[in-house]
Image (cartoon, rainbow, N blue to C red; front, top):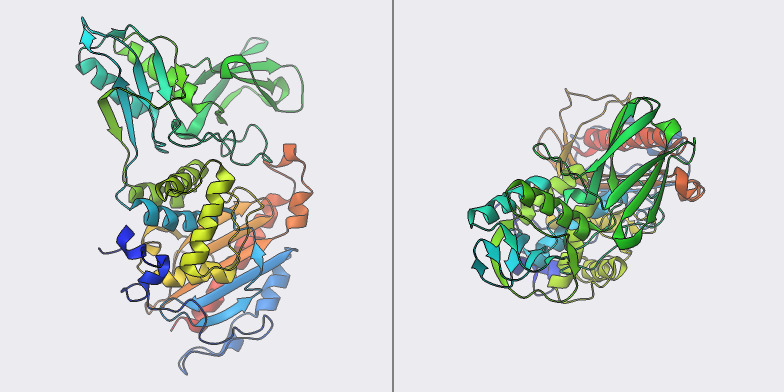
Length: 506
């Protein structure tokens, strides 16, 4: 299939089975040793521009003033020939470029056409408009499920003439292990670090809105979409007369998320998304409210721990894994990556009892199938700064999949920057890659297509881990100096790419 990959392709030696395919002609190792960091690589052909006409690597790195470490490898994407490298074997935090590995792990384990169904099950017959028994909202991990999808399911339920139930309303979320937060070292209130489970809604975020009202504020917590704004009680907010900290969080009785916010930080009004720690109860409460809109009365949701038994009467299917992955690589959604990774591990019959054990399974998969030496992921999204991989291992994966292959075809286009760090709409080369950003960690991995169609595979890692480790947990959302550092790192990444296109693009 064009631009795709099937599970059959990966079986029998995992990635090694790709050796004869149209998009993977290249060996895993370089055809020659990479040049030393301070020495320019030789030209590929007499027609290529002399290396001395492009900025030197050391000069570019010095100008970026990043501190810490810089590691990169650039190869011909078809032959695997390493063109330039610096610290190629140094294992560094990949940040969200880890999602590129997770994408292939998901394709191999689940198949690109895999979908995540969400069902409504009943444990008894319908009589007089009421289910004679329990109603179960059953999830399989769909990372894209939103309020509109639940509203559609409620509407389908109404279409079956159901107005209520005699038993319990339960939510089943054990298709995937429950994870309280992706990375425990992140601040409590950041929406990119939610809980993960078999039932996920609105990326497991609740909408918090505040409006000045007299001398105080009115607040609302809801699971909104473009069409609906169902209020929830499982997340509660209290405005407190203080300046700092901006937010505090604790888990209350019955799984309620209890938040406080500093009045001094609110201004006249605003909103933001906060993470949800009990996504099963969140989804249940939102569905209860949507069912009520359609004339269906349900009791408060309860978590179902055991294996659900009943008859499925309504089903909502997610998009294909291919479509979900393309969106994940574009928007870098952490929840999506963790769901794909844990679902892949379970599909392979391996240990996915926790995020770390599932990541270990992905490490073993990458080492066995791609010959990676350094893969040591702690999650599937790259949010943990404890994850490590080398630039040479990432580029080996990119070369193995090849230009136009399943990974390349799912990557987003990254705007080219000129020498001043500004967007260059007249650029003659095209970058399709995965970005990665943590405070004082920045990465870029993917493919660059030169004007003549020649494709290079590259990975660039930058990171000042010591500086990152010095940040207090409460300050990790926007620490001083991190934004400027990230800008300088992105400048360096683009200047390296500009150099490679000039020198090796033909």
